[in-house]
Length: 227
Image (cartoon, rainbow, N blue to C red):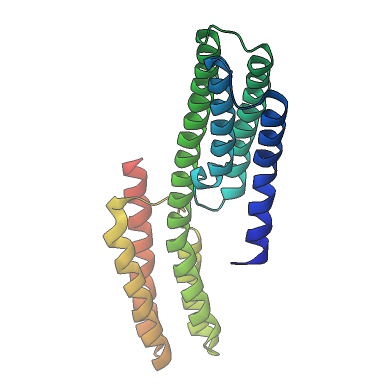
């Protein structure tokens, strides 16, 4: 186990150790009404939920942002629960219902805020993943055509490949399942352009580039129709 992990475990245990030492040394372990033990349990439960927060964070590019919002909710719940719980422990009322009701309400508010935030994070992460996936086609197509363009010294051929490159760069980033087959065909067409560029046959390069440009135009047309 790494030292940092050990340090985090020790840090996490500090509150539990200090709280329990104070509780049992000042109040003892016997003679408490149910309201005290309810508060004692809810305080520990709130702290456990705070420690479990990392497991609720949505994975993704903005994981730090997602984590911040969840930690804010969990920390707020723990602090409020700690104050409420300590008040009930100090007052130790014989009627346990107020303690239970207050702390169930607090937990319900925490659960609502946490689940709402998690759902929002999942939606945002899903949108980010979709955007990144959409970007992938334009990036890959542009990068491959740029590599082909830079790989030839013949100006006439370079200029022809540049037309295909410009067509790829001007493509909409947003994609759609409706054009998936067309995008696959365009990537295959880039391979065809690369093969004829190596042969340095200008007419063949122009033919393949024109086909790619028409495919790019058709992709844009289909995307406009699907929006």
